[in-house]
Length: 313
Image (cartoon, rainbow, N blue to C red; front, side):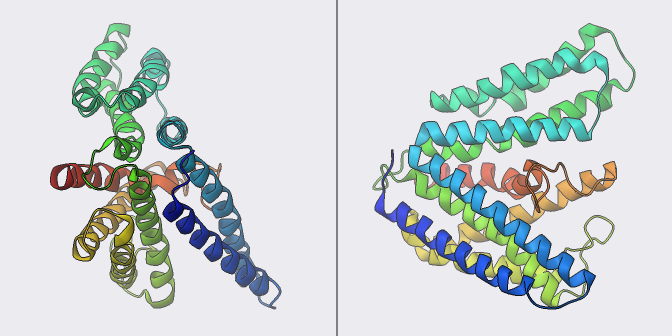
C-alpha cells in the first residue's frame, strides 16, 4: 500500500472538490425551474455521483501501487474493448479472432507492463498483433467486408488496449530523483486530461458561440477549446510539485495532454456519429460508457508516456 503523504493530500483536494460540487448540486436541485433546467441539474448531479465512485476506485488503485494500477486499467481496457466491438458489429467468422483479442492479447499486453518488458510491450499490438489479426480472420475463409472487419478489430485493440495501457506503464519509468512517486505522475495525467474535458464543457456552455466541427461534435466550440486548454494548462503548471518537471515544463506537458485529449474526444465523437449513437455505453450514469470517460486518455497517454521516457529517464 502506497501511503505517499503528497498523494493522500491530492486525494484530499479531490474529496473537497466533490463535496463542494455535491453541495452546489443539491442547492441547484431545490431551485425552481422548467423541465430543461431540471434535466440539466439532474444530469449534473448524476455526473457528480459517478465521479465519487470513479475517484474512490482510482484512489484505491493508486494506493495499492503498481499491481492496483495495472489491474484497474486492464479491466478498463477490457470493458472499453467490449463497448467498441459492440458499437461496431462484426460477423460470426470474427468470433475466434475476438477471443484472441479479449482473452489473450489484452491480458498479455498488461502482463508485459507488469514484467516491465518495454521492448515487446511497445510493439506487440501495432506490429505483431496487427499482422496476426488478418491472418487469424483469413483462416476462417469469410471474405465479406474482410478489410472493414479487420480494421475494426485492429482499431479497437489500438485505442482500447494499446493506448490505454500506457497509463499504468508510467509506473515502470525510472526517473532520477523521483523514485517511488510514479503514482503521482499517473494522478497528474488523469487529472489534467479529465479536467481538460470538464473545463472545455464548462467554457463551451458559458461562452461557446463558434462550433469547431458541428457535424462531428456540436458541443465543441472554439471558446470552449481555448478556455478549456488554457485552464487545464494552468492547473497542470500549478501541479508541477507532484511531477519531475519544472513549472514551465509542467505547463508544456499539460498543454500537450489537453490538446491530445481534445483530439481523442473529437475522433471518438466521429466514431459515435458514424454509428448513430450518443454514448459508447451506459455503465457510468451521467457519463455514458467507459470509453466515453477515457476517450481523452486514449490519445494523451501514449504521447505523454514517450515524452516523459525520452526527456526524463
